[in-house]
Length: 271
Image (cartoon, rainbow, N blue to C red; front, side):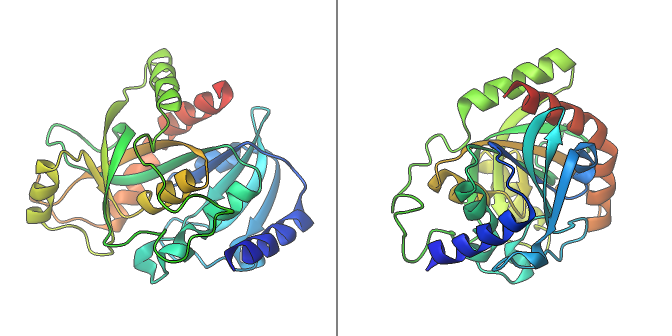
């Protein structure tokens, strides 16, 4: 049963630390530098935690980091799992189950993604206000364990409006441009075709990526308040008529990381 596996994972984590945290942070591709700012760090590789899978995507370390960010206790997920790595949706989202049962209340999910706005540019930051699940699956398919959440969770406010309002206020105070938009989740690992991008634009999506949506679904199912943030690392296929590469994504995310880290850090300080 899922609850037994999660209990075994937590028992192992507690051998490393008994630190209690309310806030979790998932770092996307190229957005790892915020982990370097943590103090009193306890690093736990996924390989040390029962039932965790290995993170194989470029730019993803694959470890939990407990620490303090400017005095605020935090659990940082440095490196996520993706559906395209061959894992099931349940395996991809398993760390979220563990984070929820560790007692977290709020979860900040970040990602590097493609922009669908022709007027956008690499390095833009976007507050996710809603999402479209275009992965072809859902992590809640199968037996539902009531210990985690209801059979049919409401996704009307999957992204907490109060946390979103806080993010916008912080961005304004720091003079960091922050747009708002809808994120569409795609399975990958191939990038989208120009025809798919045109179709996504007609649906009202503003950014596309290969993560986040499954994690948000499980976080909401688990009762966590979610804040979603995207770093636009490239304009999606067909907009500029240029080839796409994962290296481009990592480089662009790295170049935008300074302002992203500054924004996320201040949001956490005010949570």
